[in-house]
Image (cartoon, rainbow over all chains, first blue to last red; front, side, top):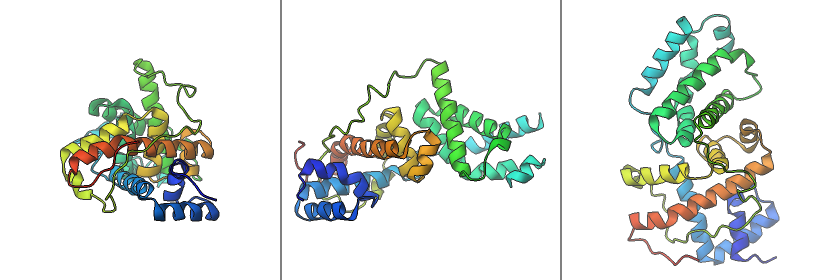
Length: 78
Length: 195
């Protein structure tokens, strides 16, 4: 089986999760080995997800924990 | 610890929730789009979790249960304030239609140092918060909170199949939105044209 680029893009999420069936993964891998564009799409997607998951993207506001626990104390004792 | 809290040692609740403060706040922020409302939603979610702690079932992960409460609180708040965008499932493509990705090369290195720049952090925040709700919540739970497909499906009351479809589309939307922007951040890298 030979895949074109659009079919490979449909498989990128499953490829990143290592969730493709073995035969499909082999076919996708062969395409990636020879297609610079799809290989770049895969790498950029992976790296964007790594950046997205970084803790610094959604930092807690200053004083968040203190305000939260003060309110909890108020509710729990009230 | 939960049994002790339910038995009356309520102060232990502070310790129970500390590891999840950021997760709950992040989910709230992704819906409310501003820090003040997100903090309010997060506080309400933690309070509701405390008051309903007896209904928590040990077979679920506490984090999944908490995030589910935060999601419900945010959705409820948005409905109440009539901020909810009318994005029905029908209007949102889940039919496997192709999303052509943004094309860039030389991304084999992980550019974590880029996150030191405020503009890059804001760009990523904007990309996440601008995703349609059904894609954003799956992306956050799977790729940020690192829940698995089954846990994500349980938290959102959807099927595992829907989790997979939405996750794929969310990732490709992020890639398509961010690739050309990151090109400007890293002008020294080589780029190829968009399709």
